[in-house]
Image 1 (spheres, rainbow, N blue to C red):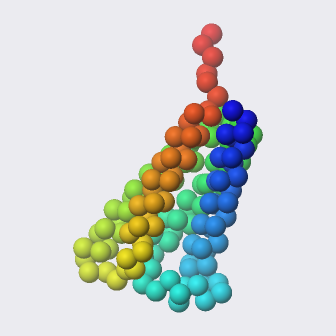
Image 2: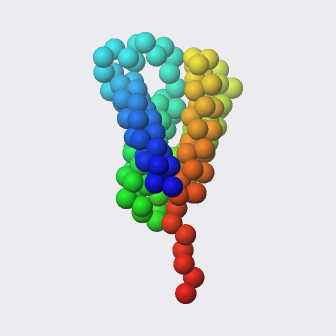
Length: 129
């Protein structure tokens, strides 16, 4: 069980840091990454940025065995679904976007759901009195 906790923590930290770097690079135009991204959709970038912080918060909670360890991932998943809806609205209204965004958002949403389920399995069980 401890190895699952450690693996999940490392995955969340790595995924969170990568997401934080990429999304903040577009938001703050670091290293010319904004230009390389092409037609990015702001709601997607901001949702990913906030999700990256939630991934890191979840990693901290899981590593320390906090009872609220699943909550940041639930919130990230809800935000990603809202981001997908916002992206869809952007697209149907003729907004410019990169086709890679579709696959990236679907992957991120399902991967976050998977991470949430893994964290739920690690959550300490409440003992009945």
